Each structure stands twice: as structure tokens, then as C-alpha cells.
Length: 290
View 1 (tube, rainbow, N blue to C red):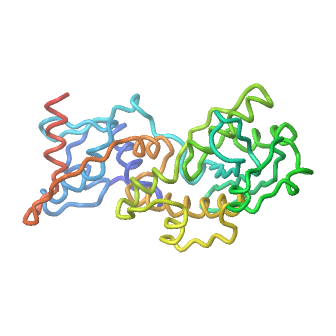
View 2 (spheres, helix red, strand yellow):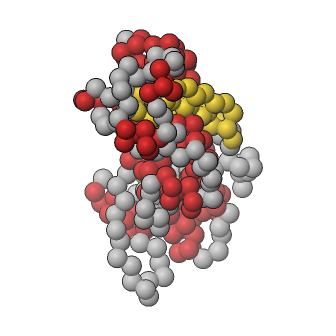
């Protein structure tokens, strides 16, 4: 049986085996999962691992092949840098002329926090009293802060080549990208991941997904809530736990994780007496459809 380096994900192990040629389900169960006992249980385990991943194809006889061109396995989650971002703003959306008042970027790589950046930003407009009450950021605090133009190069550098992560990433990215385009004429085009969506897919039992609830669930303290650095650091620590959840599902590369997060989960009615995973039937449907 071929051996794989310690920590090598099961999905990568399956990919490596299938690059050498097609394999039957039971061969994959033996070579990748180390299962050689009950054939039904071994088959169910393989379908649990690969059945929802479109790169792995199975025919009616249970023989698997690899469609690597669909979405090749990419950079390992342990190797890639994640730029975890939080911004505080003067209020609502960009359409109403609101601007950033504070930004923090916490870089996660190799299972830990490796770098940090934070600064107040002069928004060039008044901060509404309600926003000040929430964040504690006042007009006096930002009056002597740099304009975004003055930090744009540093923000761009810290985002380029990294995965952009935020809790409700659409909001933070819309402000950051708009400010970068306004200041530099361009913004990077990173892979973007939202920890709200990650929680929805990876921790579905958690019904409420605001940062307070998610941080509490993972035992993460946030000593500066509604300030950019406090929220970015808490989100970074939550991200580390979510990446562990992803690895527990056999996901250890960015492309697979991004694809997994885009998928729509489907509710399945489960028969309490059912002892066989429904994934084999799902695979049969995929085979017939293909």
C-alpha cells in the first residue's frame, strides 16, 4: 500500500492515487482510508470523502477517475497567507458617501497569527453620534489620523497574494476595495472568504453567526469589540478554528475550501432506522446524470 506523508489530507491522498490511473471504490478505501473490512462501510466512507467533490468521477461499476482540470488542488491551507480584515466606518454603505475610520489586518499563516497592522483613518467627514456610541471612535480621535491615501500602499501590500477574510466579507471588501481604487486606481483581486459563510457550512449546528456568538462558541475572547483590531484579531482566531474544521472534512487546500463554501447544502430527510449513508445513491444519480 502506498504511504503518504503525515498530515497529508485524505483528499490529496486520493488525488495522488488517481493520478496514476482509475481505481475501484474498494481499492481507494484500502489505499487511502486503510479500510479493508466490510465492503459496504468501506464504500460509504469513500463516497463520504469524495462523492460531493466534482473533481472525482465515479462510474456505475464503482471505478473512480480524476477530472483534475475542473479545479486542481491548490496551495495548502498551512502554506497560504490569510489577511483577516476588519474596518470601522462612518455608518452605512458606500452609496451614501460613508468612509473608513479604522482598519486592521491580521495575517494568519501556518496555524497562527504572524503579523498585524492597524490604524485610525481620517474619513474626511463627521462621525454620527450613534456610530461613536458603538465604536468609541470620535471626530477628535481621527482628526489627526492619516487619510486613507497615506496608508493605501501598505494596505495593498498586505492584501496582495493573500486570501481576504472578514466576518461579513462583502461589507469590509466593498469599503477596502473602493478606498484602494480611489487612492491607487486599482485593488488586488484576492480569493475572498467570509467567516459567516464558513460557520454556516462548517459548523451548521450553530444557528446564530454574529461574531459574538461565534467567538464564544470557539472560546475566543474579544477585548475590543467594535474596534477594528479587536474584531480582526477575534476573527483571525475564529478562522484558525474553522480551518481545523475544514481539515476534519478532508479539505486542506484553498481551491477545495472555496468550492466547498460556494456549494449549496441540501436538507436530507433521515430515516432513524437507516444504517447506510445516502451518498452512494447520490453518486449513482450523478453517474446517471453524467
